[in-house]
Image 1 (spheres, rainbow, N blue to C red):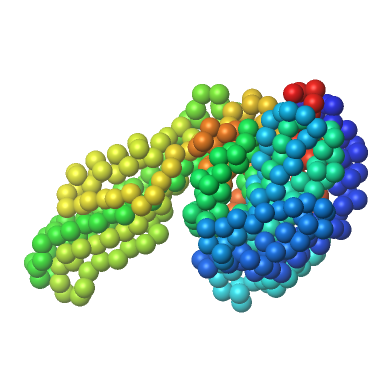
Image 2 (image 1 turned 120 degrees about the horizontal axis):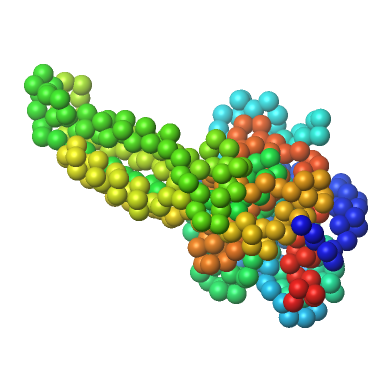
Amino acid sequence: MTVAPVDIAAIKAFAQARRDELLRLCAELVAAPSPQPVGDTTAPIAVLEGTLRAAGLAPELRHADPRKPNIVCSFEGTGPGPHLVLNGHVDTLNPGDEKAWSVPVYTVSRRNGRMSGLGIGNMKAGTAALTEAFIALHARRAEIAGRVSLTLVSDEVVFGPAGSAFLLEADNGLRGDFLINAEGPGHMNLAVAEKGLLWLRIEATAAAGQGMLTGTGSSAIARLARLLAEIDGWNDERAAPPDGMTALADHAGEHGLRLSVNTGKIEGGNFVSQVAVKARAEVDFRVPPGLTIEVIESRVRVLAERIGGITLARIKGWNPNWTPIEHHLSQAVMAASAVVRGKPAAPVVRLPASDAMRWRALGVPAICFGPQAELASGIDDYVFEQDVVDCLAIYMATALSLLSPSRA
């Protein structure tokens, strides 16, 4: 794989020269709190808007909820060509019990090549690198045939409607021809695929009665428990990758092609000595490529009918989706990473959902690549500083390769 005619050596040198400014932007974003479930992103969006304006760009603020603004910024190259969209989000997970953190939550801590702080991995470091890449690409727009758009969004962590979903519904022009999302799948791998999501509300009912007269399966809680115990066993199931994606089997690891089933919420009953007439649970299925949410939901319904007294309703859901490994978007990222880091990023399945799935659902090739260090962020969230710098170089090299006038 090659990325000619891009001068990778020059891009690596540029990224290294921007190191201090890039890491400073990461620190400013972490210091601008935006945790969910409130999801107020006005502070980090203000930081990014100021950064873009200082570089001579004209970002637009668009919002469905004024507490959750989004930035859209675009420029044209010197001639016709594809439209590349760069996407990142600025809302973060909730820190939980801050006493469990060994580093300050809203201040970047730097030690042994790491940066830590809430949201640095998911995904303020990736968003910072993407923003710096966009600014650098604008400065080199004479080398670009096509259009580049930057979408920096809110409301991603909770799959909400006020971020990318709002932008795509309001403006078809933001679909583009390719999407690079800075949400890393961990370990500087390349997420060409994402699991689907299925949330089901499951309710069991039973006739009222005294607890002393209960028989096997006559309680709503017992019926629900039987179903939940059986679907919990589905956690061991693995899917075969779909056609054209067989290489995922070599890099998916323990979780990439595994169906996961988590009962996140349960309630039922009124008093210890009475038969529970109702019991409810909400279950989260993450469905790998090779399976569909329709198949999983059908299996749950068959099981519910066999047990009896159980109904279910879908809360939300979407199917797994992917961009072929051989697509030139995937190949361009792998080629750029091979030169910048000495080996190509491995194609994997991303475990949590990202906004890239929204573009893929519209038929737009989309990948996730970013500096998140682990499979999922949590307490003492961190990234490696060099990974952030390398992402800046890889985003630039990929964009210049995809939008090269020779390709157009």
